[in-house]
Image (cartoon, rainbow, N blue to C red; front, side, top):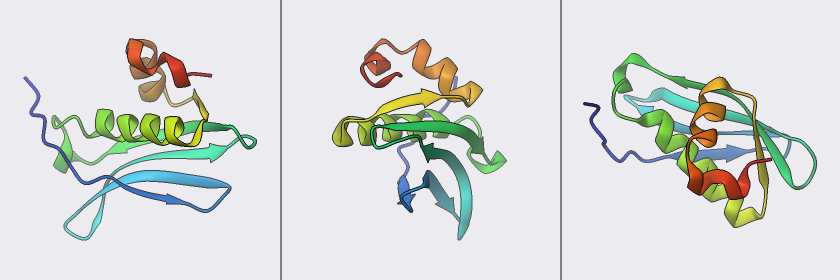
Amino acid sequence: MPTFVFMKILHHDDGKKGRFFIEADGSTAAEMTYVWAGPQKIIIDHTEVDERLKGMNAGKQLLAEAVAFARKEHLKILPLCPFAAAQMNKTPEYQDVLF
C-alpha cells in the first residue's frame, strides 16, 4: 500500500509555460509541466517522479495542486500527459476543470 506523505509543492510560471514541482536534497524530485493554450486553458504535458519519491503519491499531489491552481484562476486543463489524463478521468471531483 502506498505511503501518503504531504509534500511541499512549489510552482513556477513564466506566462508561456509552468511547472508544479517538489524539491528534495536541493534538486527536483518530481514535476508536472504545462503550457498555456490561450488565456483560459493549460495543457499538462509531462509528469515525472524521481525514484526517491516513488510510492508516496507525489504525482497525485502535483495534479491536485494543478487542479487547485486551475480552479483559483478559472482555467480548464487539457491533460495530454498519460498519467494526468488517467487520474483526471477517474477522479470525479476533477471533472469541473477538465477541458
